[in-house]
Length: 607
Image (tube, rainbow, N blue to C red; front, side):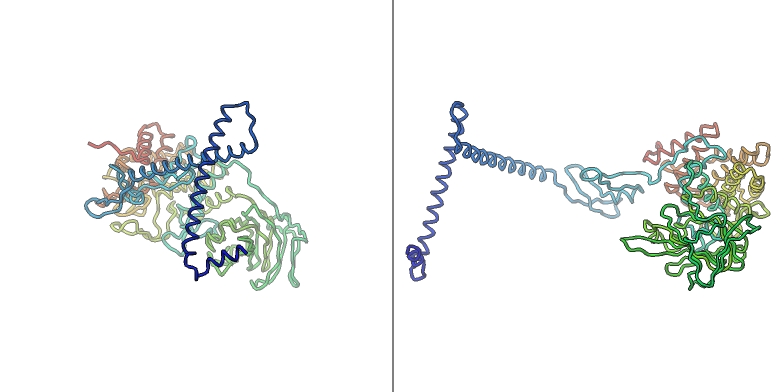
């Protein structure tokens, strides 16, 4: 009955309901607030009495009220503190707020900067380009940290004093075959093919020598026997590993040319057919080596499995009796191993990672190749000694050394069969030009090959390599004279002369290596001595007070100084440190220290 009466009061026909209920509600709210404050005061008084009268026992209701009172009081105090802190922070932000201003650069243009009181902040991206420095944000610390580096290139100081036959400078850090200027590793010559000045590819003696020196240095530094797995030897056939189609044959035979038992195979040469398949499950070692000979022609295909995002794919690297350097079709990479050379026994050693990378690109290889799964044989031939290993530094070193034996001409030089323009103001270098740097590198390779193998053919080739040092650049040699007085061995024998610093010092190091092995050879003693004298005299000309120049074209061609990039500058430093370890003159150590300071932003004194 009561509900009905109340509801009837709220009907539209009774207009007083619009005002009666809100008034009642407001009154009730005021009464509730008043009771709450009175109750809270009683709680506080009760809490105080409890503290003052420890003999009185607390009742359950006292505990509840005290707890509620504590929470209310603490909450009010916390909120008050938060408000004060927030006000202080806002005041600090207003006081230290950044203001965007314009920075007027050299009275030429404006860039946006920020001002905080009397301090002005310039964008690091502008500083980085303006002053040619480098840097990056690191996230290890809270808020990040800017890593500021004046030079992007580190100085790889020699581990020990330089010795002929030892580690060559810091070349153990070099990965020549990974360079973009390497088109591929030739399947015929087993050395790098350069594409720097001709995309079709050519053999660059300097690059090949560096390839050999890097692997020799890695061999000495690593001092660990590479992991090795023998997959096939002595011509033993394990039937479980072979798949032979109808019409194909696989037999174990004695081959007098090889000097033991080998496997003879015969299968269709067509790539449309799988050929004879040798199953492999190699997940760790990707340096593949095998002895191979074909009767006429044929191919060997290595099948590699990739695994990215749980999707497995197969890539194929084929070594075929052909003179084509490298070709690509879809997921297939083909390397020619020589149309004639494939008919004689050869040990072929290949870095499968590099072979795929050069054919399909780094993205196809990087963190995707999971294992070698098979080898396919096509054509009629013989195979033996299939192995995989983690490295093959010594083999790769001798690939370079033996190529230098084959490629040396009657003048004792290693000609560069490519046209090269070093500077617009200098004449182009026509195919067949020699480089003193390449001559020096080659001598360093050959002396090490001689010391390791004791075979005189390497030493004899190194001695023949001295000939271009006595022939002037204009006459297809590498000798230039600075002010008609100081002998300089040119990396690029241009007209006018360039006097490249790093190439000259590398040539000196090659002469030093040969000089230590042949101390009674007057020619190498003379060439090294006169070169050292020139370096001491001309070294200050390369010093800019904040770095070094790459060459002396600003002297010989009246051009602006050709400032050395930081990686070339640090190479200059390492070269001087090497010389300081074998020569007593302090000029090399003191200059190296001053040039090292430049990499940290130190400048030479001014007037």
